[in-house]
Amino acid sequence: MVADIKDAVHAVDAAAVMGLLPARPRLLALGEPTHGEDTLLDLRNELFRQFVEQEGYRWIAIESDCVMGLVVDDYVTSGTGTLDEVMERGFSHGWGASAANRELVRWMRAHNDGRPASERLRFAGFDGPLEITHAASPRQSLTALHGYLAARVDADLLPCTAETLDRLLGADDRWTNPAAMMDPSRSVGRSAEAERLRLLADDLVALLDAQTPGLIAASARDDWERARLYGRTATGLLRYHFWMADTSPNRMTRLVSLRDQMMADNLLAVAEQGPVLVHAHNGHLQRHKSTMRMGGLPLEWWSAGAIVSARLGEEYAFLATALGTIRHQGVDTPPPDTVEGLLYALPEDRYVVDPRRLATALGDARPAPRVSPWFGYSPLDPAHLAENDGIVFVKDVPQS
Image (cartoon, rainbow, N blue to C red; front, side, top):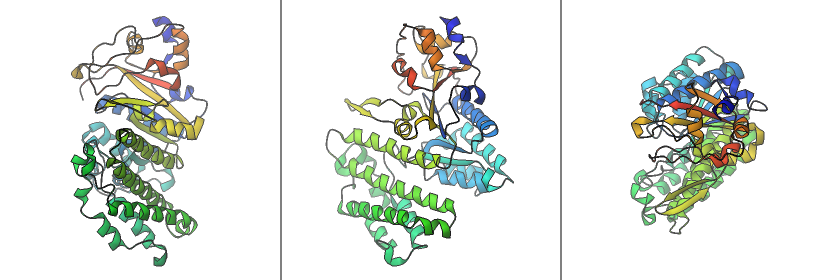
């Protein structure tokens, strides 16, 4: 069996990845089965450099706050701020503390130095301003969208003034109260002010769309793209807060679905400017439905990758990353009857795997699903191997 599988594996490089695909995708997604391991991020960085140099990729999008990511993009494109400031203010979820993320930003800035705008690399966060414990206030995105429009269109076209927005928004800690995540009654998402803000946000986005020709002619296209981002984020956050106040059994399904929908909307917008390398958890990029249990209830929803794949077709490609061990987290040598165990038996440390040839090598054999002893690691689902365009396998992940 191991000898047969050898025909399905290649060295990990951009050429091997592209050899698995019918054409260069606009959006190439590289997943990871766990977060916080710089070994996997170093591999991402290495592949991104190769895709830039060999395939003309100009964007990278990662699972981080889309508004905070603008701080990183400003730095890598024009040197705004310092690297320390950017790592502190440009990433959510604690990702700014990663040495590999720091190296990515440093390399992108060095690459861009002295290059014309058309050749510069770009950075995007594509997650919403959402954390496990809370969702952000819509203030930043809503007021930024209003400010962009107020500076460029007739005042009588605006649905409200900046002062009205400020009054309706109130104190930001009303929106970010962590108690609201588990207690819907603590959310302000269905207050009269929040309901009014949802209507105003919709009107502001509609005005942005209606004024597109004049706005693009009168200002930099990047400014218009950012206004679109602010609009998506404001409406997405207000929708998320609305469902945080829901008391039905489907509340958590709504919330996890809305997060991936916000991710998908951001990815589709970046793909318009692509080609893009995307990096996030496998679960956000896979084509099949996502499932989990929360509070004893089963949740099922479509991931961002599934939504984007349905929209883009062959212009979306997904590489799942699988691994052998994370011993410092209690994830030891995989059982030999799992996909990870079969790949672990091969001699090299990392591979790109062709899932079609792997399926041929397996024949009628049905690998067992691997059971993770640690909640932070998600093994491959052998029932969905064929839905991956490729698999990146890393044998051992040492402690970062």
